[in-house]
Image (cartoon, rainbow, N blue to C red):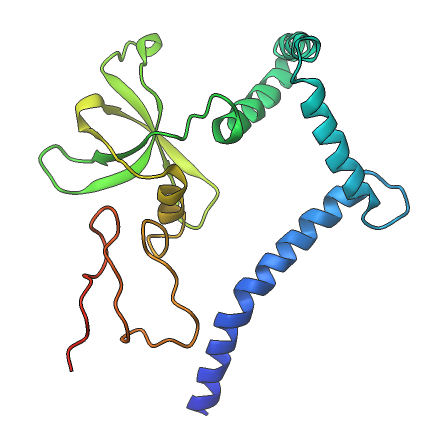
Length: 212
């Protein structure tokens, strides 16, 4: 019975991540495909991709950018639309736009003089509008959750990190089990066999060979 249960757990380890990924991809595909009800499965998705790409092409020239700026100013004046539109616009631009905000990974000392640190990203370098010129805004993503917390901290408690933004985001969101040099081991490999290197922050097991 114990052996069968072990096989079941190993099957979950192998199949669940792949099944969850395929399900999420299928869910997104079908939702986008149904946005354009053309009666042919997959055609709605293709039409949506073409329209988005065409929109990006049209707004890359002078006339398109001017029209986009007019639309942007108009939507920013509508009370309810302003909240939704500007929030989504700034969030998308923060990740993939020309003015990326999540590109300054830092380690924040939670208590001055201690060695306890929290990992995040500086999103605003000056808060003069709030009367906090010596403070910075740091966003702390949460592990295994599409959420986070914005914290205002003193500038001298923020330490810039020389790591890739995507690596640090993966490290935080995964709860520290991947990213920053930590690669997932192939299924079936013993956790005691082989060696693994330290991460870029010095977190992780040493690169030592198992003694015989």
